[in-house]
Length: 449
Image (cartoon, rainbow, N blue to C red; front, side):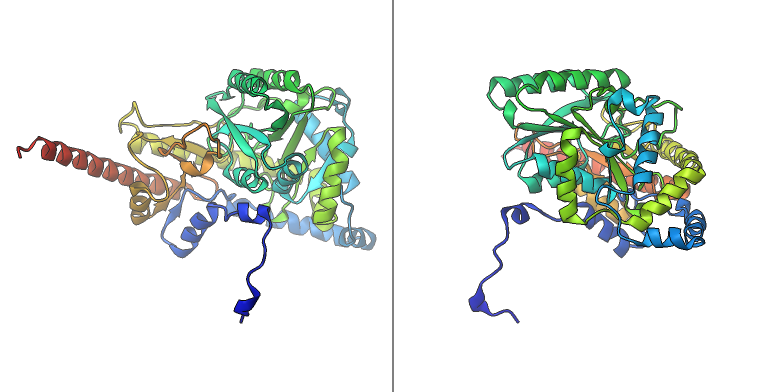
């Protein structure tokens, strides 16, 4: 037992700013309530995980004693050199360019323990408490938690069907310049392919424009564009998704491109990577060295063989077909169940890839965790991510409470249809209850004294 005279641990200011991610609560519900359909957990399709392929790759590694020993040895902080070369060639192939066109080499590639580690390290080396990070509105809520932990101040930029509105970004940067705060702007963060949470993608024409805007304001210091392309490869409606913002960064001066194998191969391998400007390589490696001395070497050997053998490419193509079927199913289910429900106020995104649909309901329906709809949905046996989680701590803005993120990653097609039907019933029940309350209040207010 603790001696009461000793007092408590003196936690750091960062620890006091760091809270439990809200997704933990939603995951707990999914585990505790077995009959609940979770349209909340952003997990990948369990049936698609490459168990047989990985078993084959591991056997190949250990069929050669020397290769097996290499895989079981410590690796380097920056990652397996062959994998870094393979990753760079792969990223450039996606953009239809050569490494020379963006002034990069394998030395600019760092393998990380998932892309989340890279997002954290980049933020940690650039942000002091009070610095400004500009994000989309809404944005990826796990990264929002990182920014809160760092003590960053958020400025959020509106989105439309083409992603972040770049001219609004320019206006915000100009306002910060006029107010003498531009020196505090350190990062522009975008999840620019099939965004988490909205499913929206930054259009091709806005990508180059965004880079031009940020370059024009990177006068006294460079403003880092942190391009989170975690869902880039999960593209369903075209063979040619937009080129990365990084592909326009010809002098390799401003853009960090972060990607991951978690969504496209296996989250259990917990491996991501980033292509970095020269100036960021050493500080990132210094921080990563303090974190883990380098990401899991054994897993890197598996992924390298997957890429070299063609297993990885075949797996991505399979995923695209699998998720396209699910994406189509959730859009069909929403149309069938909510297509005629207050259509001027109820709508949803139609993503061309990724794992998410963003549903908007009338402003007078609160979708928050403590709202009537969330509790009603739980009673119906379905759970979603409240949109309120997805809005960063921008002091200028009021958090919107009539949205929700729906994911189709881990549920079956049958569960998608049933889950959306349950959610629709909950929405309509709440709308009717709220309308009845309004009617009762009108009646009461009109009664004579």
